[in-house]
Amino acid sequence: MPVLEVKGLKKSFGPTAVLKGIDFSIEKGQALSIIGPSGSGKTTLLRCLNFLELADAGTISVNGKVIYRGGDMKKYSDAEIRKKRLHFGLVFQNFNLFPQYTALKNVTLAGEMLARERPDYRARKKEILEEIEENARALLDQVGLSDKLGFYPHQLSGGQQQRVAIARALALKPDILCFDEPTSALDPELTGEVLKVIRSLAEKNTTMVIVTHEMQFARDVSDIVLFMDGGVVIESGPPGQIFDNPRVTRTKQFLERYNGT
Amino acid sequence: MKFIPVTISLLEGFGVSCVIFFLTLVFSLPLGLIISFGSMSRFAPLRWLTRTFVWVIRGTPLMLQLMVVYYGPGLIFGAAAFPKLTAVLIAFVINYAAYFSEIYRSGIEGVPRGQYEAGQVLGMTKSQIFFRVTLLQVIKRIVPPMANEIITLVKDTSLARVIAVMEIIMVAGTFTAKGLIWPLFYAGLFYLAFCGILTLLFNYIERKLSYFRV
Ligand SMILES: Nc1ncnc2c1ncn2[C@@H]1O[C@H](COP(=O)(O)OP(=O)(O)OP(=O)(O)O)[C@@H](O)[C@H]1O
Ligand SMILES: [Mg+2]
Figure 1 (cartoon, helix red, strand yellow):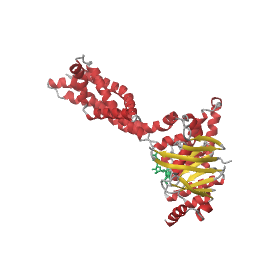
Figure 2: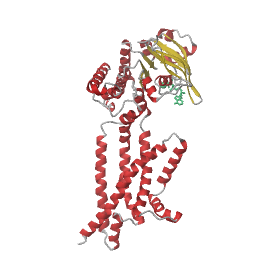
Figure 3: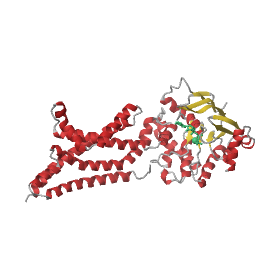
Figure 4: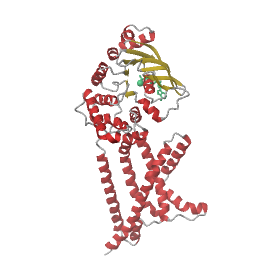
């Protein structure tokens, strides 16, 4: 059973149809990369998965259960949407760390807020908060920032900030972690450290959906590559197929333009 | 030796200035927040109405507004005028609320969308995002323009004299009419001291918030 299955997902902004029926699925532990030209709807797709936008039509299923159905019954309450969001994590292009909190606090904050809803929160408050902090320290260690726990975002480089953002997203243990061009706001010499972290997550079989323009990285790290253009999936398959033997001319043209530059 | 009686009179006048100052702040700070919500409303008619109101208030002199509030009711409706101090407070509160609303608005709109979205995807509720993520960033953004506006208010209290409220400049003026110039300079010292204290206070707040950048 796929951990994530998206069927017929559509999204328009006013008269502009941005997603025109997206279908794909991933199995647990797989990494799926999404490539495609600017404006093809990659960010919009990730935003629909994280319910920052509500898709107009189509379904999103996690572990075999439909958690979102667009269309007439899109009257989900804030609380329901909030719960559904927790299946997904999102790492933004420009990090969006909370500037007034240290790296450690950025990672623990959301977990602390969620813990308040636990029935045993009052009784075990201290232990729970310690667990959350322990987990955050471990994650920051995993992304190579154990010496930066007390640093504020403005004291960190872009690459370090993005690694904190990855730890922050991991802290809530999402079923699927999404990345929206995680390195495109970084100076070239800083992209490596972030890609390395994502690569190590792939080795640990973290389920990921990665929108990226780093073709070599997509080829190395993903189990499936999905090429999007004009709001539809043009072609998808294992990286070998997409990059070496694309079946669709449009894919070929896109990749040639990439390799050309 | 006139120094002691002049001091006492000026202190009384300064007391009136302080009353205008503090009461204006007490009412206009929250009112400004409400107005800023109106000017950011998704309901377009409310938004345009609020913004037009703010434009009119900010685009005309406070002295004019004060005279309208004081003389308007009697001359337009034949009603009894507000007591002088009440008229001053009405005009000042409305005027400063309009200015504050724009400061709040720019502070709130200045928080990047990504901050809200990061909170949302982390499963935080709207109120958690407001109190834990955006509020402090808004405060940090609005402290410098607020400080400017509040220091301007200290000096604007002297406008109350146009409807003969006995604030400190008016008091000093009565001595000048009797041939003494120094009470005017003396009155200036009161303003300098008050603004100096406010400046120190705001610098302190800014320093307290300087551990992060927005
Ligand atoms: N909130 C919105 N309102 C109106 N149009 C939007 C909105 N968000 C996205 N769009 C439009 O949808 C289209 C797809 O945008 P999207 O950001 O998903 O593309 P993308 O594939 O992520 O591109 P890029 O590679 O440049 O990031 C664009 O034409 C964009 O202008
Ligand atoms: Mg994008």
